[in-house]
Amino acid sequence: MSKKRGFLVWGLFVLATILMFVSSLTVWSKRQLLDDQAWADSSTQLLANDEVRGAIAQKLTDALFQRVDVEAQLRERLPAQRKGTAVALAAALQNTVVPAAADRLLQRPRVQTLWENLNKRAHAGVVKVLEGEDLGKNGNLSTANGADTLDLRPAITRLATRLGLEDKLKANADPNAGQLVIMKSDQLGAAQTAVKILKALSSLLLLAVVALYALAIYLAHGRRRLLLGATGASLVFVGLLIASLRRFLGDAIVDSLVKTEANKHPVSVIWAIETSVLRDIAIILVVYGALVLLATALAGPNRPAVAVRRSLAPSFRDHPIVVWVAALFLFLILLAVGPTAGNRQLLGVALLAATTAIAIEALRRQTLREFPETPPPALGKTPGPT
Image (cartoon, rainbow, N blue to C red):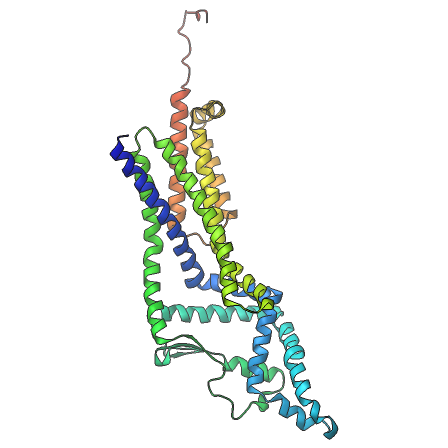
């Protein structure tokens, strides 16, 4: 390569690597934040965790006690000489008894299924809001006054009914108690803009990355195998970088947001679950990068690679259909059991399949050039001395 071509090739390579990192983050954001099923699955995983479920049970209990004057109810029912214990008993109920009952309720399979369905429907409504649809008042989700709010009061009422407290709700309770403001009007507009950008970039960046890597390898005359190996190394590097950032950035976020030491572990669990797709993306980048490096090594001039190609030559030459069927079988296994197996999009699978097919065909042609079939000796002639 000339000096100018070398600068161009490596410039394209560096740009593709940077865009690969950005594309991985956009893919994670789109799947985790905008996919209803992914959101419901992560919500179910959160509820299955003991610490997170305990925190949710405590929040439900606190919301219920804001609507029900338990202390007053205890004073009415306790004998005169025991009325002074109403405060302590109410505190014990709020901190121990009711949270334990709520925790047991949240462990029931039917309740967990209901939890998943409610989260899926609520998330679908939030996504519609983020995509610019004004829901007005739709179930428990509202966009009144330009804000995105979630009304939890019906859920609190159901919990009170289950505990036999539905007729004890405070008459003078704050009418907005139980309403959770998810985003204010200015935040809602910014979020809608971000979602539009995210949806546009998630597919375009992936195509740009593939195109830039392919162009860099094509322009690297005489150095294409080197560029192919560098591409595999860059995939491994980006995967390791994402995994490291997920770990250390998660610790920093938890330490900055949570000041109580006892609450840090549940929040760390939430971070781990909500970034599980990002972890899978990091793993798959490392795996695919390692496979590219392996393919580069198999195409190299070293003795082990030449020996492997020599052993593959008869199969490539005499049984090409068997080779392609075996490759397809291994490819399907990788898709079925690999990370993010259930979340891959058709475009990504098509690009991966095309890249794999091109690599196998390139290896097959190189092997057949190096080890062509030896022609049989002519009739009536005997081979000369070797």
